[in-house]
Length: 159
Image (cartoon, rainbow, N blue to C red; front, top):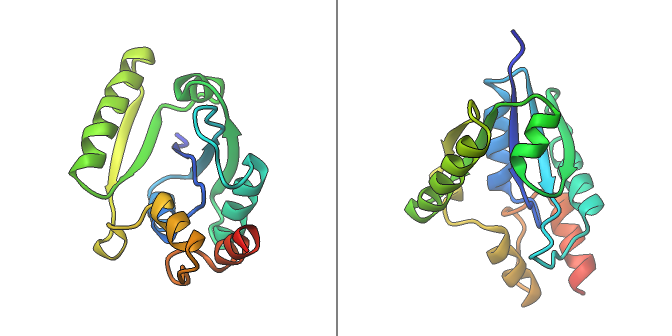
């Protein structure tokens, strides 16, 4: 049996915390589909294609991942690909409350879909894409918080 997991997110931009969760998921699954959502309710800093490329570059050393994108419901994307396992990273209790609701909604909409949670390493528990963007917008140093290609893309975009 081949086990493929789905690791969805907006990844705007990808952080070292995202990379860590995806790398760790890749240890346990044959394939991890890193799915970038085109969320129409948010105005991303990077386009969908840019976010996919930033992830591809940051995860080039991981052999068993696939970068994809989707819009609409996660369960519909998962059904199209015959996927039933979602992996999400958790940083804090607030993440858990939201992600638990999402997991329960997904399993209601798609019976048999399970969500597995990977807790953030303490060194990344504070890190979010929103914080990274805010620091970068004010000229702060994001090196070490995001992959090098993302740091360059942020500097280029916000300069």
